[in-house]
Image 1 (tube, rainbow, N blue to C red):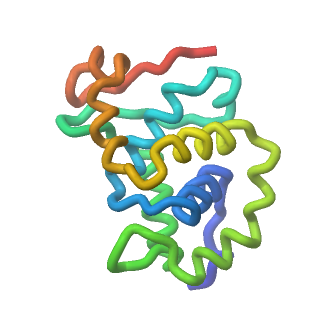
Image 2 (cartoon, one colour):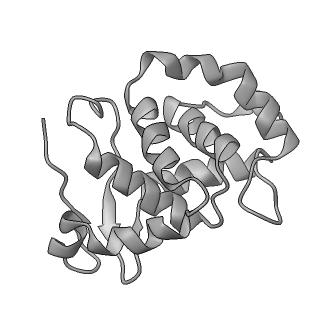
Length: 147
């Protein structure tokens, strides 16, 4: 299967960017990170971003994010032994990275990720104390403030 057999969106490129810049240990950390980044962004920054997050017992889950991760994995852009970009994934990201310069949400994600840098375990811890997460009931959709 070739890299070009899927249709990739800016959401795919954003995940590739995050995985190329930071060492996310698990998929759950990526879900929690994107929730924290989305919750801390201005509604105008995430006008094109449509993630629905559901509260779990130890964090959040997004079916959209999981679908993107599955797309990347099916096309061998992720390593099979750990949650990181493969050589092909890194090469593909370098080809499409310039597409993100026109969006504000990826910039916000990078600022948030730089706050955590090598302490990505804090993401999984801090999501538990987020007010939006705490108000939601387990298994229910977390409602983010709208524009």
